[in-house]
Amino acid sequence: MGAARSARWLVAAVALVAVAGVARVAAKPGGHPRRRGIDALIIHSLGGPDCRDGTRFYKTVTGDARQWMTTFNRLPIVSIHYVVDRDGHVEAGVPEDIAATHATGWNQRSIGIELVNNGDGRDPFPPTQITALVTLAKAIMARHPGIAIGRVLRHSDVDQSTFPPERYGDGCTTYRRKEDPGDAFPWEAFRAALAP
Image: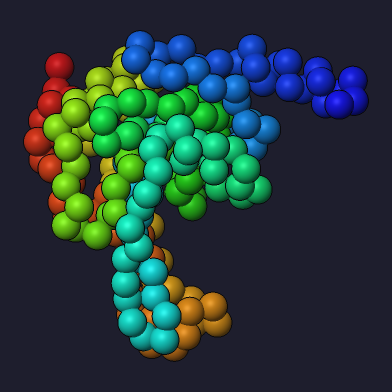
């Protein structure tokens, strides 16, 4: 490992996100410097729709938060701030003061949280996962007062794109690419739990 790479690794290892109950993980070298204030929190699920030749389908999401954060840390383009496991365990990724690449057009102004879930509207979100998400969201909102409850958003709220035909086929263009966190997510109860 070269000196410059060692120095970058050391800086990344020191730049840990410290949140109660959150695993500490070295910041990945991805993300981008922030150019504006944080005023949104975007909730994702790892799963979601896929499409081939006009047929929409969902894949089963396997693995835990730690495995998914390892995956995010290897991806060259996509990154995330946090992953919340089904059992409530939270993994931290890109530090909050860096813009992760998780929601087109919203990266500079938001914090992104992924939930381990199929995102198909049927896979339940366990109470332990929702409790951990509420705790994490409240802590983020306390650190970033610009995030009002009305600015806690679903990925589906900020991305209405459909499947591009050149990659997925003409029959897929009527389907939305981003539905997460999906209909099984208790959205109203979650938002109510964020109230002071």
